[in-house]
Length: 400
Ligand SMILES: NC(=O)c1ccc[n+]([C@@H]2O[C@H](COP(=O)([O-])OP(=O)(O)OC[C@H]3O[C@@H](n4cnc5c(N)ncnc54)[C@H](O)[C@@H]3O)[C@@H](O)[C@H]2O)c1
Image (cartoon, rainbow, N blue to C red):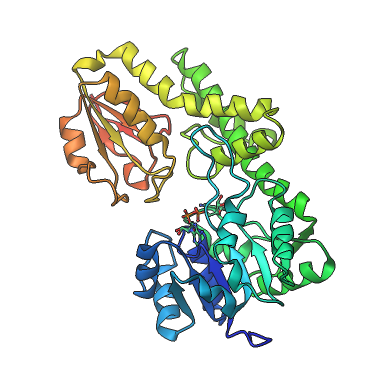
């Protein structure tokens, strides 16, 4: 790929030091594109330029080192780099606030911070998951600045931990106000994947939110089933496996477990806010999924006097095999237990950012009761010789 019109780089990724921006930047560089990262995090920028991944992402480390060594990838805290590239991809975080309100100005605000560097002829690709209408806001904002740029919305759909395969295997949804913009965005993403799906911007914004809300609601359905069964001392997983056996209409029923992380909950709340809080299924899903740790502790308290117990929590990250603790329900569990139990210990084989974590052996030795918060592969089949709560069904019971 050769940058055109006096640009020195093919693309710049704004927010490219983050969990999805960095794998994307690495993937484009691995395909021969010259890539810049603009990120406000000095730590992330320094680590990337050192060839170090700031977080776990399987398959990304070697490609990052190679991309930095070849000169195809460089990170910067200087917004001026935005002016160097023909394509500007925006993938900053879009969290909801503590009252679950989305911030439709998050992306426009970030872009205003580097607005003086936008140049005529650029393609601006919004890739964050946005509150519907943000693409139009950005189009208006850039037009008000007098910039002749094209704006596309091309949502990121990878799951953390699978970025370096899914960036190449998932179809890419491409949206833009006109065919020329969509064609230009499609040409960019064809560097990674052959399948392009076109939508209008407003359709694509909803497509992303519908996808994440759908997953969140599905997890809530099984988590509610789990609680119904568990309240009657019945094993939900045994029931689930039996009902799905050679029965295709139930084959997609997921297992129960903590539905957490930086996307599903907040995107369901973004969709609810977009629909004037009229999203009964989304709000019900929130109550069920966020209620599961309370249910787990309630059931433990039925059986044990927690005020005299040390409770050990296995897992801190929001999902198996990950070091990402953002919006992890393991920490909600810890907070609830911190109020009810004599002592709480937590362990995780991947997380390196929490100084309060202790080794697994210590948790197993000192705890009176164990709770599995994250189904890390390391816990599969682990033999535990004390009472435990295991929504995920990963532990084995010691022979008695
Ligand atoms: N995490 C996922 O699995 C996933 C999957 C698909 C889509 N998404 C969406 O992608 C977006 C990014 O998510 P993430 O998990 O990578 O977030 P993140 O917090 O890991 O990364 C965001 C990055 O943006 C940087 N940043 C913030 N404000 C900035 C600014 N004004 N200018 C430049 N850089 C800035 C941050 O320093 C950070 O490095 C969100 O909209 C999210 O919903 C995430």
